[in-house]
Each structure stands twice: as C-alpha cells, then as structure tokens.
Image (tube, rainbow, N blue to C red):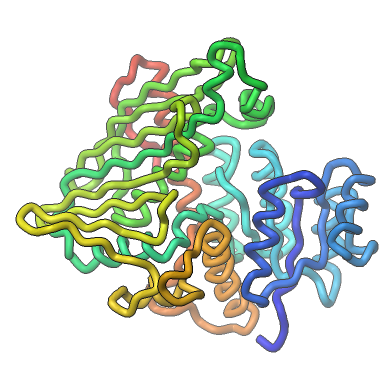
Length: 384
C-alpha cells in the first residue's frame, strides 16, 4: 500500500487504560493512523476525546452505529475498527462493523458468551473480513521462539503443560481492607460475562498454551472461587486440563495471589527438553534438559528463529516489552488487512495473529470452567 491504514476506535476515550495501549501499539510502526472514533456512550465525552486525539470533529461520533454507517459510506472510510468497550458490547459492535463491510480488531474476550462468539465466527467466514483478537502476549518474540521450538520438535513429544496467571492486586478486598480494586462492572455477569478472573486473565493463559503448543483443551475440571465477600463472579480459578494428543496440564489464574503483579508464565514439558517463559521477564526463554545444563535464550540474537527475529525492533540488550508485543499483533493484522485491500493472497500458513477462531476457543474454555465449577469440579468437555 502507498498509504497508512485508516483506523477507527469504539470505546477507549479519556481515562481508559486499554484504549491508550491500543493506540500506542497501532501507531508504533507508522503504518496505521487513527482517524475516527466513537469513544464513549456519552456523545460529549466522545467529542472531547476526539479533541484529545486531534481528530476531525466530523469523524468523532456519538454512537458506534452512526460511526459504522458513516464510515462505510465514505470514500476515505476507515479500513478497520478497534473495539475496546466492556465485554457485553463486543458482540454488538463487532457485528455492526462486520455487516458494514469493515474489518475488526477486538479486545478479548471475544463476546459475552459462546453463542455470540460462534455467531461472530460465522459472520467473519461469510464476509471474508479480517478479524483480529488482541491476545497480545502472543506478540512477544520469545513466545514465538517457544512456538518454533515446539513445532520443530526440539522438545520431543509434549507430555505436560502448566500455564499460570497470578495477580495479587485485589487481595486487600478479601478482608475488606482494599479499595475495590476489581472494577464493579467486572463483578457483574451481565457486563463481564459468566466469569471474572478466568474470563479476564485465565483466557490469556489458555491462549498462550494454544499458541505455543498447538494443543486444544478437550476437557477440564475447574474450581472457581469468589474470595472477596459479596462478589458474584470469581477472583480465583484452578483447572486440571486434558489436552489433545494425550497431554495433561494445569491452568491457574488469580487476582488474590498476594504479592504477584502480572505473573503470566508457561512451562512446557517434553520428552527431549522443556521450556519456560515469564511475562515479567519476557526477553528470556529458559530451556531445560534431563542430562545437560539449562540454557537461556535471549531476545534479539541471531541464533533465534525467523519469527522471533522478525518481531524484534531493537538489537539484543535493549529490552522490549508489553507495548512492543501488542504492536506485533497489530502489525500482523495490518498486513492481513493491507493484503485484502490490495487483493494479495495470504501467505502460505496464514498470518501470525489471534483470530476469531481463537476467540471462540476462549469462550468455550470459559463456559466449560463455569459449568465444571458449578458441578463440583466435574470433568467437562469443551463445546467446540
């Protein structure tokens, strides 16, 4: 293409953390420009947010419906929309823009429930639109190196996978000494969905396993707990997991694990070697052997595979982190959108970003966790 992609945004206005993250990630490589938005359900707040971003007032809308209609009718309309609203709106907003012929990037989880997720999947398949889901941890170079090692058989046959996402920021609320760290809407099933903790961060752990190993969850036994008094939705969850290919594992997520910050990590155990990666130290990948010293692979070095190198921006010893990983997801989706606009066929093997299919898998994971927990951690198959 001989121009930047034109981006719109729904949600993410003044004071919204995730909206700012999306905008930084989208702009990092200079291939995308924010040109339009419906930044709040309050038209005045949306207008003020548009002023913050120096947008043409005519392209700052009071509702996402108005935005989809107007942008679809413009010769210079947006090439895609980024959806960064609360969970219960993901489906309606995505459906509206897909039906208007506009590509979509959506924050996770995909929808409020599995039924909505499957409907979006059908609509994406019908329209041929590009749909990306921002499971941003897949964008880290050393996560991509871990995936390459598994695909190339360097770990041998996979036996066990453990993925954890402990946070401790809400632990003060357990004894009533906190300040309500979990936002009220995340504790409301009508807005957040059937799960808070497993739906919000447990899906990241689930997706990381899927991305690195290629394994799907066949069935699980889950216990979800609301340690915070008065909460309807969970703030902690533990799952025993049976994956495809006979692999066993554990997925655990928590918001009351005292002292942990954002400790997403994964360990993959194979017959030849194992690996482990920690999001709080993302530039390293540890590889372990039964009869040899462990090795530490570091981002930016020439001994890494092509995907890890292609997704690094700075030489070794210059750390890269959260925003860069997020930007790698945006960059891959941008390439797919550009190719669609130019009529270029997708590369062999497709594009390297989380899709609507990954989102449906995440929704099936959430549904199975909730059903299992309600049935005293009974083994529950995923509805895929």
